Length: 360
Image (cartoon, rainbow, N blue to C red; front, side):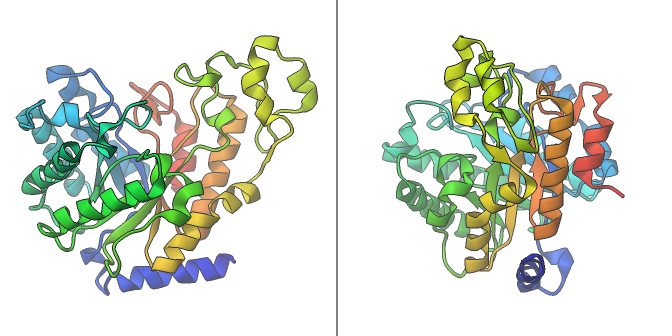
């Protein structure tokens, strides 16, 4: 299985062209979260949060690319006028990355009409919001088309969450048409419906005969470990046992839990997670990539820093081993954060950096 998958990805790589400098190819990277996305920082505070010094540090860690999330509300006002300072920061990041030999994926992370965890998402029901979405990409293309295709890729939208998979497929196809009129060869990154889940990947549809597509999934399983005691999930009160690899929560451990947390923990009792089982969960994205002859990428994965350290590091080691085994590129979530970060301010998690960068 290992050899056949490596052969598939080798063939895919060759199909992109004989000159490796002309193709967009990513192997290992990190997300630059909470800068131009999901952050209240503005002005000087935003400028100082992420600088060329960080890009240089990422390159020295051994990474070859960054995934750069951007939010509509940071980049454009409510009338669709670009915020020039935010666009300048985005372009600065790409220029810094080019200087330090890193590639960049610009990820349109959150729209005013679509937040992946919002109850109401007008994007799926309002044609005007859909056209606005296409206009955002037209705007981005005006600023970014000057950068080489080998340096920069576009991720259409982060973690689409439509009521049904076909609704996302139809919008995705329209967005492709809008971008391809402007940039026929730019690599476009796309994932499946419902948080870029591995479970819906078999129903993802992308334009045929377009080699400049990178298929992307996100992976945070097992959720009890990756989102341990996270305040924005149902696990916010859970601080009980969690294990990896093996049985994540035994019956005996569950029985000893306080009654108020048993409801959220009960679905994890006696469930087993191992490296082999994680890999089995990737079957649908791997099959889709093989079917379409396209490369595969995991744009987000990670464990919150509040989770037990030994179990977290065991999981990270297995994940990186699986990426290397299968030839799947990846970017961890994320670079600078007190929750999932490789660094937290000026403090580095050297052990985690060593594992994720796979630096020899």
